[in-house]
Image (spheres, rainbow, N blue to C red):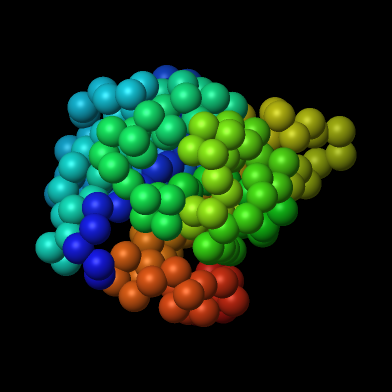
Length: 197
């Protein structure tokens, strides 16, 4: 822990109709962290639901942008400036089609990888040098199922049973990042798969 404020952002789409969608994994992880840390998510600042608290004595801000996924930067850019958060202390959490469900991956920096929400954030914070946590949702399994339909629907029953475990694993990864840094968190979590445990 550095004593510096961290901004932890989960990406998703606002509205009840999207709450359980695969595309809202970022929101779900933020909700898991808020519950663990006793943080209330209600303040609407810079187009985001936010909650402030601390983890192991250091200040943290949790945020769920309400701009819809593809415009997340319109919220994250202003939030990072409002709170005076350095890029290395901004962690963005989002879903990833290219990772199997049950797998998570941390990176210290990098490209958007085709994720429109991340493209928007990189444009608005003017750097790609910030950590991110990708949560695997897998790809459509049924022939003819469009990607957009897949990400905007809920999980199949077999995945729903593992969802809580996936969210807890992601929350553990965030806590390790805050406590020990991105490199240690990457080493600890990037090689694991939920079924390995």
